[in-house]
Every structure is written in C-alpha cells, then in structure tokens.
Length: 139
Image (cartoon, rainbow, N blue to C red):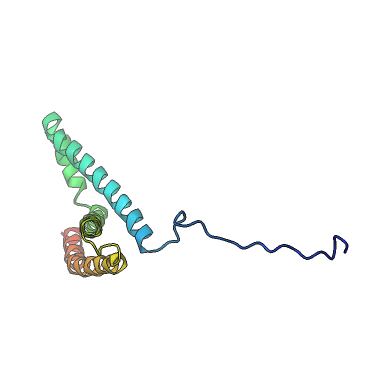
C-alpha cells in the first residue's frame, strides 16, 4: 500500500468543557452588569466633583448646573436611569443565583425577566423624561 492510498486517521473534534463563552444570556448579563457598573461609578465621580465645586467657586458651580439642563444631558439622564435600573435588577438576579438552590437552573429565565421588567420600567420613564426635555427646549 502506498502512502497516497493509505487510509487517513480521522480526528474527532472535542470542545473544551466550560472554557469558552458562546454568547448566551449569562455572558451578556455579565458584560452589561460590568458596563453599567462602570458608567454608574463615573457618574458618581462626576457628581461628587461638581458638587465639591460649590465650595471652590459658586459661579463655576452655577455654570456647570446650567450646562446640565441641555437636551443632551436629558438624554444622558435617560441612559443613567437605564443603567441604574438594569444594574439593580441584574444584581438581584445574581443574588438569586448565588443564594437560591435552583438559581443556576433558572438563570436564563431570570435574565429575560430582568430584561422584561427593565423594558416596562423604562417605557414608563422615557416618555415623561422626553416631555421634560422638550419643555426645557421650548422655554
């Protein structure tokens, strides 16, 4: 038998167990939880700094507060409320996974519940915020 006609050994492809994320709900909730946590941290940092500015220069503080009344900052408030809501709801989901015996089994359903509650709460908040933004633009 020549080398060219020898039967080839077949390789079986095996997946490494548990080492790769595949983009399921657990990964996306982890990513969103980290992003919202960092965004909230930076908001709190800016909030502390601009509030501390009142002791240094009340005029500068008033100028900063006036800049916060722009439509762009109104949209930023919508993003901030969305980040805080998702972070809080997902944090409750994480607590349930950690402390409830069946938490891991139901983590996917809990993720979609968090998303659903987040959408409902944001749907209640966003129209009111947009009305406030538009009323400040017209004033």
